[in-house]
Every structure is written in C-alpha cells, then in structure tokens.
Image 1 (tube, rainbow, N blue to C red):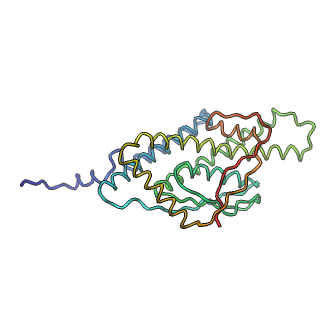
Image 2: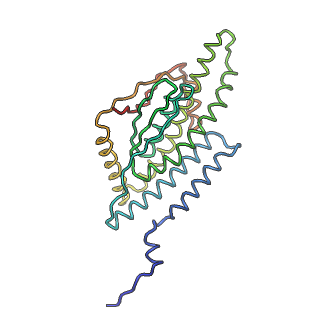
Image 3: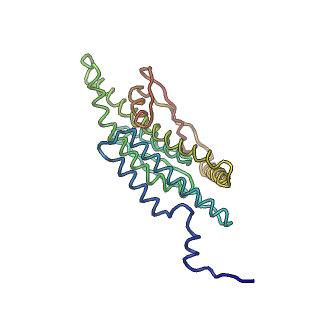
Length: 273
C-alpha cells in the first residue's frame, strides 16, 4: 500500500486551528481596541469594539479546543488569575463589580476578597480556561480604563444639569461620588451584556456540532474547579446605586433607562471565604 510522508510544513499546518493563528487574532484584537480609543468613538461604540474583540478570542479558543478534542488531546487547563483592584477614592466596590461582571460574561467564575468601602486594594479571583483568563487579561484593563475616563467626563456634565444651589458642599460631593460609582458599575454591566450576547450567539450557532460539547465540558470543568477552590462563598451585599449614574453607565454599552431616583442593585458578586 502506497503511503505519503508528511512534511514539516504539513505538520505545522495541522497544528494550527482552521481559522487563524493566535498571533493574527491578537493583532486583530489590538486593532479593534485601538479603534475604540479614537476620540470620535462614542462609549457605546467602544463597547461594541470590546465585545467584537471578545468574540474573536472566543471563536479562536473554541476552534482550538475542538481541534484538540478531535485529536484525542487533553483540553486546555482550567486556571486561576487574581486581579488586584484599586480602592482609590473609596470607589473599589464599583470597580470590583465591573471586573466581576466582565469575568462572568467571558465564561469564568469569580469571587471577590476584601471588597469594602475603604481605599485599600481588593482582589477579584477568576477561574476559567486558560483562553478565558487570557481574554480577561487583555480586555479588563482596557474596559476599566475606558469606564474611568467616561465616568470622569459624565459626572461633571451630570452635576451641571442639576439644580444643586440649595445643597451643601458635602451633599453635592455625595451626589457626585454616588453618580461616579454608579456609572462605573453600570458601564461594567453594559460591557458584560454585550460580551455575553456574543457568547450566546456563538453557542446557538454551534449547538448541533461537536463544538457544543466542548462548551459544556469547559463550563463543567470550571464549575468543578470553582467548587474545589471555594467551597464556601457568600453573596456580596447589594449597594445603593443612583439610577441616573447606573443608567448612564449601562447606556455606554447598551440602551437603558429607569424612572426611579434611587434603586437597590444586586451584582451577585461572590465573596470568597
């Protein structure tokens, strides 16, 4: 029986996912995030760029994982990464909310530690596949910076549109502070919703293919590792959120509004024990 010997070039081609190599994907992601930083881009458009970047990374990772499964190779490891979140300005809880929302949106499970109302740094610990963690390390610093910059612009604008002449300086500062925090939290929620939508679309697209099994397997592995690492967690306390600030932040990622003056929001952050 005639056989053909595979060349080094053939073996290299087989080692790559069918879509594109990782370096090419990272270049595309970097280009998307660079576009989003243009001064003419609105916050909502910036969130769309971030969601598209997350989608590219998710598709690449799924293709690579499916190829490994077809070859009978082990799946990529489930790993842990700890993000240190600044408590500067006593806005740390809002920043951890943003981290938590985005981490869960890309498919990870996360807990917070030391998440209080002080200026101390605190931790967000994410558990996910190596690809998911890599996605978070790429996107989270960028999303956090965009949220902070957008909140700094939106907060004084909001204050200028309010009649605060009857308020004390202390009360005006409270309104300013609460709006800023609510905006950060809302921005994280809006960004996460866009990212989660791309993952939902991807899952629907592959539901009748072997890729669907890969998605389920990875979710089960992440859940098992999370339960092993954090057998005891409690839900974080909800925080008072100004409706105007929260809605403005969410609108940066998607259309949202509310008629309430103040609302209780539950971000459902898990606190590690």
